[in-house]
Length: 208
Image (cartoon, rainbow, N blue to C red; front, side, top):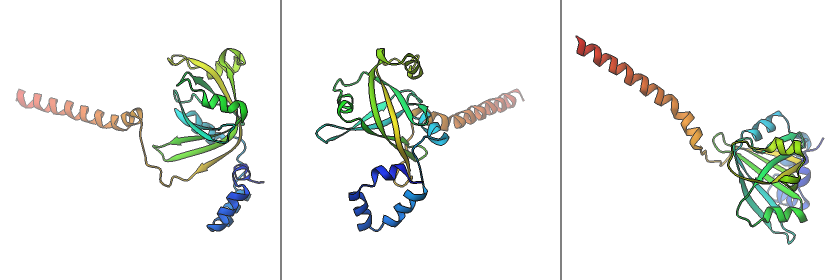
């Protein structure tokens, strides 16, 4: 059983670089025993459901890569099944680079970051974009985001080929406003409790 991500990413040129820098044996062991990493499991699906953004890389017909940010409410990227992702594609800068690239080369890479916990997940797959009005009703309903103000223009579907988890090395922890609020709320609660106790003590002292 081989590692599907390694099968795709470790081209002859990559293998030559690994040999040159002395890591070929190490990554070969990973490729032989670390897979298959071609179907999303519970760990991946849970991680994806918690993300409120990711980076999407496409390739133009002239061979140039293009990297774009996609964001929305946490969970807007849906794991439809173990090999399919879908998300609502909102109106953006009107350049349509990713949309156009996918019509000529449907290969994509996704990079999902959890900065607070220093985790990252890479996925490779094939992207198809359809106008939201033309999407299968059941799938359109699944990616719909009631209460979110952005207008959905397209539905993006990604057939997952492979994924790989990266180590946390060199990831600088960063936190969203919501994460900060959750972290410091116990401090606010404790301060409020202490202020209440202090007020009671002052009231008792005054009464005496």
